[in-house]
Length: 315
Image (cartoon, rainbow, N blue to C red; front, side):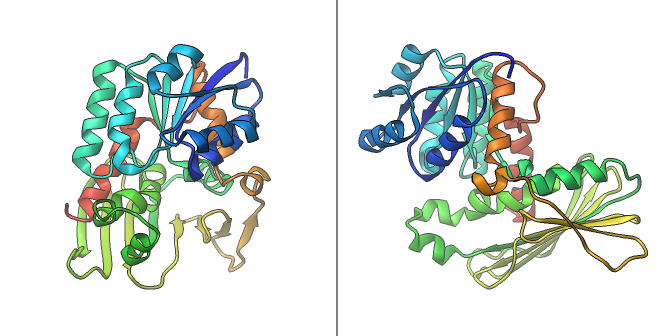
């Protein structure tokens, strides 16, 4: 980094903790302050990771720190109100995904950010996996159409067991399938012009969901979701010259035309030291806050993936 970046945090739960660890490792970052509705948890996190102060509101957090960047990691049903509170101040904002637990919620958050003219990004950390970036870099050198296949697995009963609210679980495709569906936005070129729901979503009896996607670039995609049954999270991107595969998503391998050998790509140590993707994502968020070149995922890009979720599930 070319200058110091003051970073503040809203939320002190699991994801908040993981983000703090990642940002603490970025050179030039000052962990300026934190606010959480559970002050005790915020005080513990601040003491463990060197955050300078704990505050009692978003307004006080900005007023006392004048942070360049705020990282928001509150639960889904609180994201709308908290994000709008953050948009009241001229810092760059990084929202934990999903930026809205339904499509109307996401559109409302986006409209609020636009109204305030804020720079807002979304923490779609799988874009920052070393595996994802290796595949994207290599595929950028290959001409010709891509066939992009995403395999998803979700279980609403398990989500409820882990304490997720019923309203969030009813829209679990926005809260969790966004992880896989965003890969279509990342790897697919151009706009999605057609979504054919081969095996449609049936909310009263969730099972297999299959959708075919067509991009205006000539790329095609296939989404396979298994609900309430066993299945992997996996991604494959096929071209005439080379096939890339990520299963698990943190590990990438490729197969070249004429060979049956799968060549593994070495993972970056950051994806083992930190929650995968978060360390590099933090660095790019800092670059965004400082006005430097970055690959952070904008709120508008996130909204495109949310719209794709809506089309795949016919919502």
